[in-house]
Image (cartoon, rainbow, N blue to C red; front, side):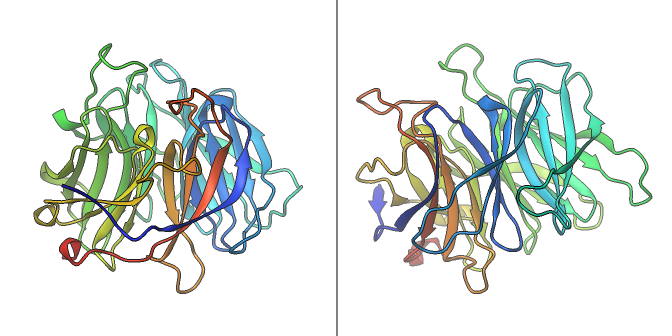
Length: 329
């Protein structure tokens, strides 16, 4: 059964032209943001917004290939994965150092690693330890682990986990839909959560806190949603999923036993403000974790609305009003 919750408050804080496919978002300590735009091969900066007034995005860089995941490694030092989707010979890890940077100044960006040729399509990423990054490979159907030596030597990559749930359906969905897509670490309970878009799955696997290896087989958390990315509220034990082609934000429990019902936070009924939601991250202002998040949309670039007209891509401030008791651990 699907149930709509009291509507979350959506405020547009930044806009991009139609056909901009905003891929991922990272929030800096001052609540400004980094945005990757896959189909334009660009990285953008969004100044810290207030609650009501939109801000003007600033383009920081244009890559030779498409950027996807962006994750903060150290304060104001980020890793961005780039590559050619469907190709197996070009995938990279870029390091963006914004320490001491001010808007308008050049950015310090360095390629630090080239992945093996078996990489297919890097997508979401997350930090699982002080020097360990996990990256979803949407078309290889697996997760890569990159260890970043503290002595400054070259990073080392290997397959962290491969599982049937992470695969996609080659040639069966048009356009091709990713297998594993978003990936996040719930550090308090030592689980990696991930979406598998093509198979409409939300999954988790336990992490050994000492070795940071996967423990046992992945298990189903929720199903039936063509989810893209998500953010986790560990304090409340829930995750907020973007359904992208379904134009909704939904909340699910991190505990598989609590997901007998489907709860929709925004997008039911359909709203033009929320067309093609893709990624999500929590505000870093004091007191806003679990209450205020920023969500990206593509305005219908991947899946146009019924009238066929693509709207502007947006970054939305989303205020969460309530969490169903049925979802609490």
